[in-house]
Amino acid sequence: MPRKKDTLFQSKGPVTPFEFNAPVVRVFDDMLARSVPFYRECLELTVEMVRRFARPKTRVYDLGCSTGTLLLNLARALPDSVRLTGLDNSPDMLKKARRRLAPHKDRCELVEADLMHALALEQAGAVVMNYTLQFVPPEQRTRTLKSIHRQLVPGGALILIEKVAGATPALDRLFIAEHHRFKEKHGYTKMEIARKRQALEKVLVPLTAGENEALLKKAGFREVDVFFRWANFCGWVAVKTGGSPRKT
Image (cartoon, rainbow, N blue to C red):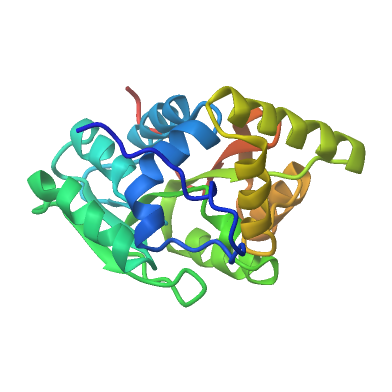
C-alpha cells in the first residue's frame, strides 16, 4: 500500500504544538522518509546492532515504537526465543502498530506508556530509543537513562538515535540549514519546513552530541560510541558492562 503523503503543514492557519495524533499517524511513514536523513539505513543498522545483543530468552524493547516499523523488522530478523515489546504514549500510533504487527502478535507486545513515568523492563537484552529521548524533558532524561541501564541484563545495550544541536551556534545554524536543504530536496516547501519547526519548538529539545554522551555515562554506561552521524543526527550504542556482543 502506498504511503499517504505528508501535507500537514501546508495550511496557513495557526500553528499548534506538535503531537502524535491521528492526522500525524496517517502520514507518519512519509514524514519520516522525507524528514529524517538516512532513515532506512539507520533502521537497518539498528536491527543489526540489536541482533548482536539480543540473546535467547531476553526481551527487546522499542521505546517510542510509533507505528511498529522497527519491531516488524526485528521480528523478521531475530529468533523466536527473543520477545519484543513496544512502548508508546500515543493510542493512535499503537493502533496502527497493532495492524502492522498482527502476523507477529504472539511474540510482540504493545503497551501504552509514558516514558516520563517509571519504566518496567524485564530481561532487557537490548533497548532502542530512536528519535524518542529528544521528546523527554531534558531534566528527566538522566532518570530515564538510569532506569534503562539498571534494567538491562549485563552485556545488554541501548541503541539511541537523536536529533542533536551543533556544538556551537554557528555549527548549529550550518546543520539546520543542511537539514532544511534535505527536506526541500524531498519535496517540502520552505513554508512547510518553517511551520513544522515552529510546531516542534519546546516539544523536541535537542542536546549536543557531547551532552548526550555525558548523559549516557552519567546513567552508568561505560562503553559508549557513535555508529552514525549526519549533520544534526547522531546514533550511539551504549553497553552495560558485564558481557559482550553475541557473535554473528
